[in-house]
Length: 294
Ligand SMILES: [Zn+2]
Ligand SMILES: [Zn+2]
Image 1 (cartoon, helix red, strand yellow):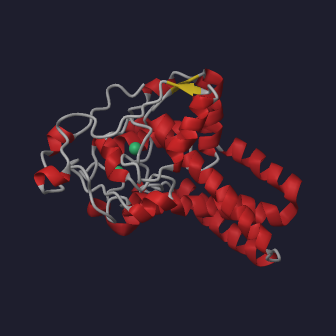
Image 2: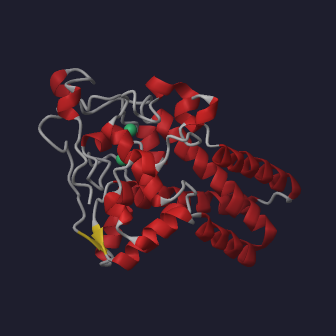
């Protein structure tokens, strides 16, 4: 990434957030329950990333009411992964050009740093440049949330401080943001490096038992590349997928419907690796189209 391609505003925010959090951790007395709080809030934020930002806004894996869509939008921005429209734009771009030169965060193309955090602070990570999100831009409240994503985060941080004091703010608020960021950055790198493919998706996406279990189902990434519109990332009965369970619960209580529960590849062009004996097959044939996101 060239120097003039860096979004210095975002890069500065990342640096200041890390320094502030380090200073706050140094200043506040450590207590074990604060570490537990941090783990719980990080899990809550990560599920927001997985269920709301990724599965719902990027892939529209179910239908819902407009008010609950806004709730999902709030949950998505609490991951501080930027606005839901921005994230969906970058992520749909990833599915379209996965491990091709235009992929923003392909480890095989951009190396560790570029695919870990380089793409996040790049000027190329811009929904106006990348596109693919006209279906989401139809909703003014989502456009607002996309621009002012820091406001729900500020309210969330204040709520934690109000209820639990400074220790809760530092561990449950600030530290959990940093941890969620690095979980998301690690995911973009490891999901295309660690594990084995089940389907010949024409890219380097992998399935990993460890990452699948630890990251609420997101580590079944090769399954996901084979069938991006499905809410279910774990295709086999033993492939634990906590994010999918969240959607099943939401469906049970009537908050969402038309949930895509399909397993297996999205179309016949994608074969199982066990059938063809190779992780890479016809790239163009297996490229999943994105015309019908909404
Ligand atoms: Zn991927
Ligand atoms: Zn995806």
